[in-house]
Length: 249
Ligand SMILES: Nc1ncnc2c1ncn2[C@@H]1O[C@H](COP(=O)(O)OP(=O)(O)OP(=O)(O)O)[C@@H](O)[C@H]1O
Image (cartoon, rainbow, N blue to C red; front, side, top):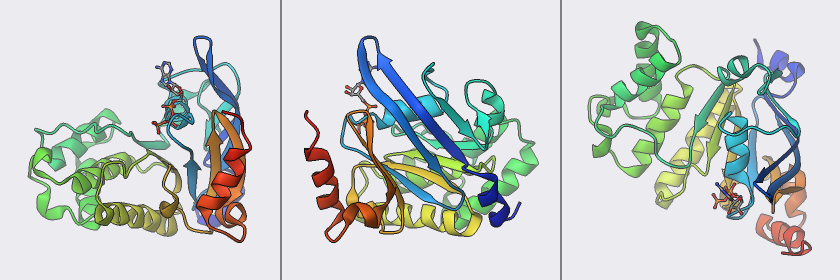
């Protein structure tokens, strides 16, 4: 499918009126936004805004009866397999096996996704080359730097060629150079492959003026648009503060 055809087909990820509570504690209220193909879409919010909870709902770890979520038009609650096969996920916590080699981590994940070993190997070698990790493919993951391990996790999330990639604070704990590398790598995938990306962060410098931004604050969407509209004449940080300081804690 061409990028033009994908754009016409609608969002790669749609979130519509989603609410969630831990027991009596409501943490998401009527959250809606859409991630388009070929779009770097940021979910911007402070600690505790509800970003990880929302990702747990999108990836099927948690369930809610309020609202709908769909990947490429497939409802996550009603047709989870159709939806989740088109979704790639990089969780906030590290989930690689540190004792297995880079290639084996990818192969294991490809097998879990039901892909033939030959296909997985070819794709893995291709992605590792692109991610400047080809020379480390036979090394145990624990010998890699934090930034390299993050790149392996992103490579792993792409092995089944998803239409949308969801990353939960992927640069947390990385040094500035590794952060810049990871952001650039994912932006290149968006530009070249038409991948839709949902990138959660609380860091304004990871966002460029043309990015789509959904501001999540205390479980509610306060802004859903383009970053430069949120910044207006000032910085993105100022725009964010103007928006959130109106809300009672
Ligand atoms: N298992 C849980 N039980 C009860 N409350 C929870 C649970 N997990 C998260 N919360 C609460 O839900 C709210 C949203 O948390 P969540 O982790 O989704 O936010 P976040 O935006 O991802 O924050 P962070 O950037 O710190 O990860 C917070 O007030 C948090 O304390």
